[in-house]
Image 1 (cartoon, rainbow, N blue to C red):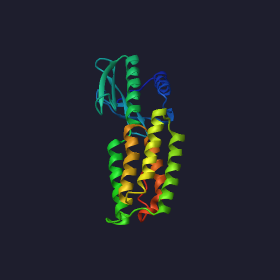
Image 2: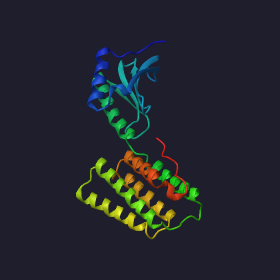
Image 3: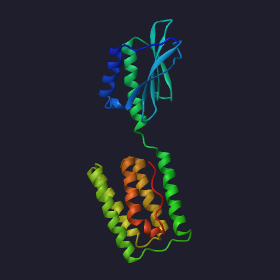
Image 4: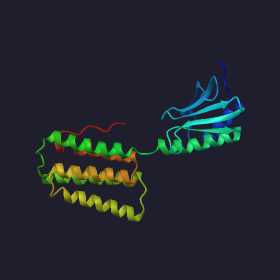
Length: 232
């Protein structure tokens, strides 16, 4: 079967473009696939952590490069007749922009579903009717855990003055609410608060996970049993 190959200098161009896009080149590897335009095998660059790819196709009739890649700007897969190598390389730059956008995008719907699952699991662990008020000792444990979580957020995230004031006000509310709400109702508000911060971009998805895990370790025993751990 015929094979279309890139020149060593062209592969080096791609390597440098990846570096300038602030991706580790070690995350990418060269593979092969059957071309759409080329009647044979073509090189394909794959971003291993995400599975996204760029295929270096070639139109033999017009002796021109063809760019085919995923993700695209507005579609899962897009293709362009790139003609010259410089234009092909410009599409690699575009692809890396789209790759960064999709690879680092939080799964907002997934986070919302996870919030529901965690709240349901906590309710199941303590029983559907377990909405007992917290004891004074339990309220003190909640206050201590909330303080640790707030310190975590202030260390790992960057807030302007208004954002920090809003954060501290919300923690004050959660601490106060533990003195008057039942445990199931309080837990639902806590999860809703943390996930709303993640959905709005106030804190990163990784920090959302760290916050929930820290809360589970410190407060899980108050709800009958620790809710399940977050997945990767």
